[in-house]
Image 1 (tube, rainbow, N blue to C red):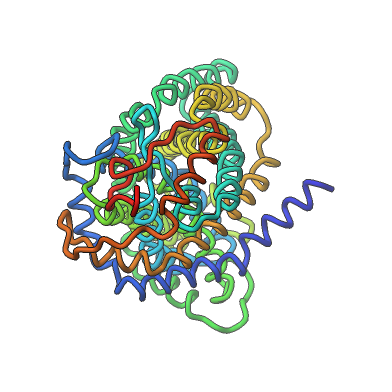
Image 2: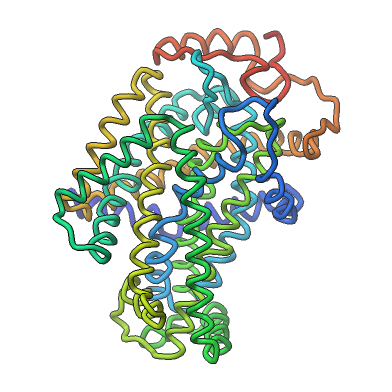
Length: 486
């Protein structure tokens, strides 16, 4: 009974209310920022730049790779196939639109996260939606709610479920006893995560770009093999996405409503724009000001949804145009059918799924650890990493279907306090966007940060003491001007 209620609530959270809320926020922030998506290629260029004198722990590219490691995963392959299977070909277009508009939300949430980040007593940068809610809006209870949902939900969607995906992929590549594979996976994860953000970023910035590039080449190869069917596939996508008539029968007969629902939901769930998770990695970046890293972080949504998910969708649809599939086909079966056109295509797909799931485990460990540290202080980090490694082993050998709905529900609820901060601090987003142009201060602005005066500093210190954290506020924490009276 409890499992049925969790599944019902999960469907409710990721149904039309959440789709409307997130897509509405994406559209609103796109207009409010003047179409910040136009600067995506500038963000790509900035992601490759380095400023060793700027405050932060890792390079902008390493922070971006960590965020991408958490979002680029099995959902970009199997999830796209599931969206097409449930919503029809038009889901590919709606998925792409959710990524295009979602770049504005990723920009805004990262801008605020870097603006309100602080430096711990050990010198590590701390930030995220919980610090924005606490320091920017004087709503520590909302920050606690976000952190609790993130710390707990990460174990399902980013740990145990992904470990199960790694086991599936490895099983398709090499025959090995499950306990041995689970033990090796746990050892690899533990080695990476116990070094903190620098260690995680060091692994992800090597694995993620290479595997993503290889996967895109694989999709391009599928499209080359199916090139006579690419035109019909694109026409099917457009017709399904814009067809307002009632859905017909079969996989290819879905109407615009189903395509919109499943395409947008898959895109939102994949790129995580609006959930507040990606800024947890972005705040560690060495950046001269919040806008630079916000532009860099925005490119994560571009790569995740506008490029990788789109290429996956086109590859799958070219296969459907070539060989129509039964209505009951699953997302994984559709992906396997497309890549089976290539020599060793199925094994290549299994390798991609394995690497993407592994890097997702690393990225979400950092997210969950940062949320846990906000609640209980930095001393909990080693314990959280140890528990995470044990969770990987348990997920690799156990059943994870029941955890998926619960974790998905928690991750969806994370978006609510995060979106609240984006709306209430919309003028702050405007002001910070105007203040900076690249790495230059374009507007002299000495106004205090809302909610970060001397009185709130005492409140923050008391709150930090309750969390047993050693947080140091001031100009070396965030990238903006020091708080008034500090």
